Amino acid sequence: METKDILIKDVQILDAHGPRKGSVLIEDDKIIEVSPSIDPGGVDRVINAHGKLLVPGFVNTHTHLSMTLFRGVADDLKLETWLNEYIWPLEAHLNGEYCYAGALLGCVEMIKSGTTTFNDMYFYMDHVAEAVKETGLRAVISHGMIDFDDEEKKKAEIKESKRIIKKCHGMADGRVKVALGPHSPYTCSRELLEEVRSLADEHGLFIHIHVAETKDEVRQVKEKYGERPFTYLDEIGFLGEDVIAAHAVWLSSSEIHLLKSRGVKLSHNPTSNMKLASGISPVNELINSGLCVSLGTDGAASNNNLDMIEEMKIAALSQKIKNMSPTALDAGTVFKMATINGAAALGMADEIGTIEANKKADLALINTKRSHLTPWRNPASHLVYAASGCDIETVICDGEILMENGKLKSLDEKYVIELAESAAEDLISKA
Ligand SMILES: [Zn+2]
Image 1: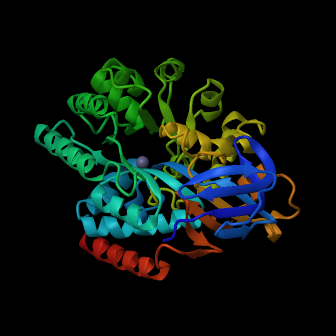
Image 2: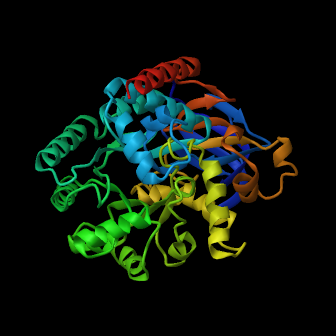
C-alpha cells in the first residue's frame, strides 16, 4: 500500500453539510484542503472525478463480521429459534481461523459497498483485528460476552476481553480500537455488567451492547429485575455517554427520556429487526428527541448483507410505515445517520464522518453516470433511494486507496471468497 498526496478533482461532494462542488486534497492519512478548485501541481496522484459523487466512508455501528460465514444458513425463523437452534450451535464450533476468514470476507464486502469504519462485536477478535489491519479499514472491536449468571463463565469472558484490549487496542496505526461487548441485559449477569462499567471507566473504553431488541427481552428483564431493560441498566449505573446500544426497538417514553439524559448512543438496525420480526424502532421520535441515532447492518446472518446504502433505504422506508407518514426520516437525515452520527456514536466525530480539512481521509466515490441514477438531480435522494452498494467505485481509508474503479488494491478478492467458502463449508459440516 502506498501513502502519498492524492487530489480528488472537480467532484460533487455530499456530507452532513450538504451538497457542493469542489476538489479534495489528501496528504498521508488526512484531508488537508477542500476548496472549489485546487492546483494539481506537485500532487502525486490526481483522480479526475468529474461526474462522480464523493461521500464520507459509511460508518456501520453494529456488526458481527465473521457471521458472514452463516449467510443464508438460517432464514425466516423467530429470533429465539434462530439463536438457540442454528446460530449458537454453529458458534460453538468457531475458532480463530474461521473468524478470520469470515471477517476478511466482511471487510471485502464493506470496502466494495463504501463502508470504511465499523463497530464489531463477536469472538476471536484478535483474528478480526488482523483482518482489519490487512484490509486497511477502521474498526472498533469488542469480545461478545455472555455468562448466563455463571460465575466461572463471567470470569472467563472478562479475562478474554482484557486479553483483547491488551493485544489489539490501538493496533494498525490506531485504526483498531477495542470496546467492551456485553451481549445484552438478558444474557449477561448484573455482576458482569457492573464489572464492564468499571472496566470502561478504568480504561476509557466504549461499551457496545444489544438492548430492547424484542418484546420478549423486555418481558424477561422485567420478570427478573422488575424493570424494563434500559431502566434496569440505569439503576445499576451502567448507562453513560460511552454506551452504544444496538436495536433499541421497544422503548417506553420514560426510557427515551433516560437515554437522552444519560447521553446513550444508539445503533438502528432496521433490516435485521424486520427480518426477525423484532419490530421497528421509533427512530423518528428518537431523532426528534435529540438522541444520536446511527445505522448498522447487524450480522450477515440476519440481514443478509453489509450494504449501508440498502440499510439507509430500509431505515427511511420503515419509518414512513411506522409513522404512516411519508415525511418521516427523509433522505438527508438517514444519510447523516450512516455517516456523521455513526462517527459521533463511536466518539470519532472530530476524526471521520464528514469531508473537511483535518479529518481522516475516509471517502467513497460513486459513478453517477448510471442509468438508475439518471437524471442526476438530488444527490441525497439518489444515494438513499436509487443507488446500491454496487455503485461504489473507489474507496479510500486513512488516506490509502483500498479500491479503485471496483478493483481491490489491498487484497485478492478471489482468494478471500475461496477462503471464506471453504471455512463456511467446514464449519457447517461440524454443526
Ligand atoms: Zn447484533
